[in-house]
Length: 160
Image (tube, rainbow, N blue to C red; front, side, top):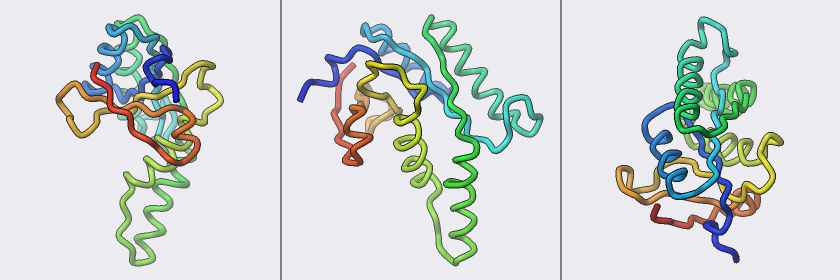
């Protein structure tokens, strides 16, 4: 199997926070063609007053990408989040279950819809989704598109 590192295009899931911003910076400095990718998860669309946090997060991610000189794309998953995240959480609570909405969000959005989105660019062979077990260190997780889409996510740890 070809190494993930041979593929130079890496989108970074960006929340607008420090960890994803630093990840984008480190990858860019390491010579990768980096693009920011922000999932719009709120049930409110951009521009809604009720979606202010979402608006600020997107604006922060856009600002970081602008400063880094990298492209930024927004993927609107608000409906999917309502259906598979919030809605599923409510249904499970109503059925006396103790759901973990983060697990469902990761399964259906972060490792499901995001890698499969038609807005992904040709040649993006892997996707950076955030810190690994070494939260503050230099270890990052990379998944090849085939590994994510095939359902058998294989972790390759790379020092940047």
